[in-house]
Image 1: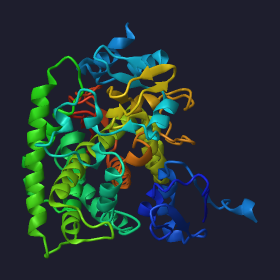
Image 2 (image 1 turned 45 degrees about the horizontal axis):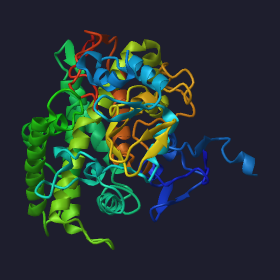
Image 3 (image 1 turned 60 degrees about the vertical axis):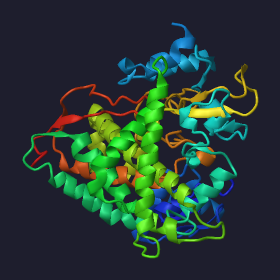
Image 4 (image 1 turned 135 degrees about the vertical axis):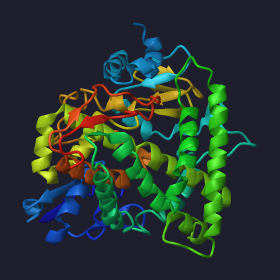
Length: 69
Length: 407
């Protein structure tokens, strides 16, 4: 599964970094780092993280990221 | 009916089971001044803008007429929920050091196994009962057990702090027309008593830390320094109350809503991966925190053509914003697969819910396990009896019958 975060929307609420800490990490209080290609055992956590994003900045799925090629 | 009595009607216990028609009336009326001089805002975009507006204070000491809950020099100072930056930011960041990212990113994730076990034990406790009370048997004990473990508070003390917690919640009940002074005074006393209790627990862990937040509060020092003893007390009280009084309503409102929408319940039972989005929809559709009653403008501000004067009580009706048709399509429909669901269930902006990730995880795990366990659950009464508070709104009891409840 792939994940893309729209960093223009991200406001650093950090919900994803709580819910999928192996995929999303906070660098300081506001900048987000993330792994765009995720291992299968992280699927559920990433789905929770995407649903929880208060600004709906996370796109998840097989297709996520394909537009950036 | 006159718009200046809307708040009186919204807080009237008679409307607790279904305040939503009153919220529609509020949105229609725009920003409305109430008979007591407070102002209500119920439209999504205006609430969202005010939550991000630095001219809006969360500190009740900025009110033209401060009340007992604002606390004076002799009282206990506000916790960070009732403060503005920079104090709010300093205290919230210090509390966050031991709760979440960037310093403790794994704490909530690591609780999943334990929360799952607590849920399983509670469901096992249904054994032999044909009728269960979702509140007392499930939705109340779960978050209480979790917040106790997280903070490092003995669960056996629950009867003590339940009493304090009830009194504190009653103290900030903004229902007009009743003399609030006595309730507020009792609330302040209870806050002080709970603070002393938690401060003492933290003190016992000085230099003898266990893996909990009270230990971290008293032992860890960061670049911003550390929480003082008084700050540990006010912060721990805030977190214990918040963990104690809100998630119970989210879980209970969740079961109630699913029982009222049996097709959605069946769908979630067969497709558990839909649950995270369903919980977001619950936060929109039946939010456990219905309003933020403690904001105050620091200057005269204009909203929808109405000037709200500096120092006036400003009440933001989150649950009304969540049903605003200007923002959400078909807002009165419960749709667990709703896209573009930027609800106000956890507020927004710098005061957005500190415990949100924990509440989300608890509710997702609780609802998933419960609907898997139950077979054909039926509501015994609809609407159920509600708790008193118009702010932290939810059923006091939720009786259900199920052939498999205790199987």
